[in-house]
Image 1 (cartoon, rainbow, N blue to C red):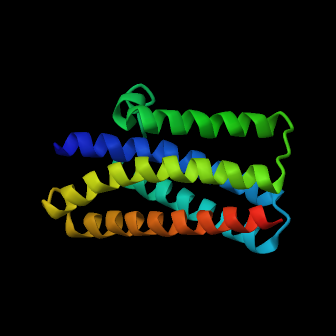
Image 2 (image 1 turned 30 degrees about the vertical axis):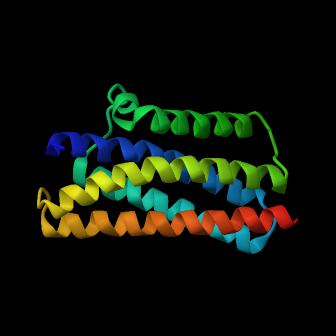
Image 3 (image 1 turned 180 degrees about the vertical axis):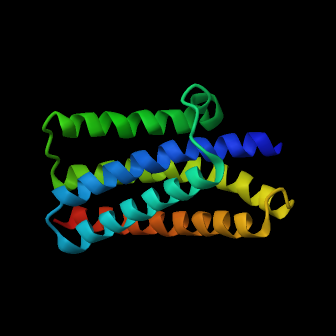
Length: 162
């Protein structure tokens, strides 16, 4: 994959990271279980940090290019996150079970999209298309994304027990 395609993908990941950060932050404020709320807020902050870092390295995303760059799964995930945010804006207050189901749905799809993009990033880093520091930062984001998946999976499990 050529470097400009990888940079386009990284810019588009910014949109996903920002949407996830916003949604998880909002869900954290709705969940009354302290551990689960704190975990969602933590993932939201890290996702926001990822978006900020990617923007500082690669610039703003192009909303015209991103649906194509992210592919069907990525564009669908972004739409779904925005759809849920709109429902929350309209006053929807989901139950713990509904939050758990939503987290499972988004976690699975986000994992697929993230793995695809971050696999491309890893290949680029390994092929030395990026500086050593950029490579280390990108690999750090990829590792954190794996932890986010596990944290969100456990939060969903805990919420289902309620």
